[in-house]
Length: 232
Image (tube, rainbow, N blue to C red; front, top):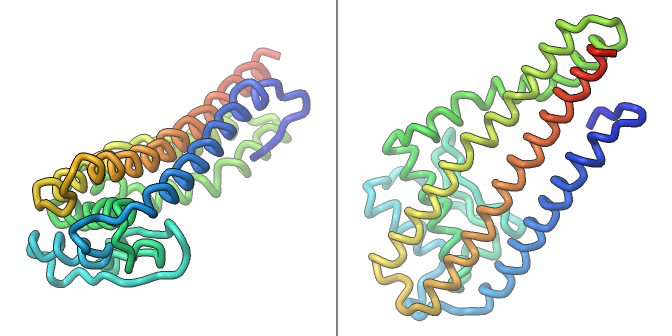
């Protein structure tokens, strides 16, 4: 993060947002660990659930692969692969089934051309470019006294916030699909299992909300700083 001397906005806006993000990360880790100990009565593993959901939606060409780590699960739309972490792949816990169904939900979104996912995937290259360019533009604009460059830097950074914003409906929808599939398919068989999976997915959703808040706080900080310096 680009730091300005005597930048009170950083302490007022950004630090609380970062603390919230840290709490959200801790929450998802602790919730996953708790419900990783609860085995689902179906006897299915995360890999089994992912494969079943894909096949039920006609996505026979989408592979399910195992990757190292914990909570490194994701769907790769370019390779058309659902990658499940070691803690999810072979686990029959309600936590693992929820994560597997969530990530597989992204594959279904992709196949059905779910609009928010399509928009998010389309803006990824622009967002990455804006994230890399924003701080150099801000620094050069401030050092050389070019307000237009500062404004351009802030605009470039706003793309990151937009990406975080469009990510929310994508993730919420994937979790909603996951719960509906697990319940309707009788993969989760009682209220205790359903509640445990829902808690895991809700905790994961908090991390995306926190990421948006961090990005929005940073963007607001830059806008306020530029406005103050422009007035000065």
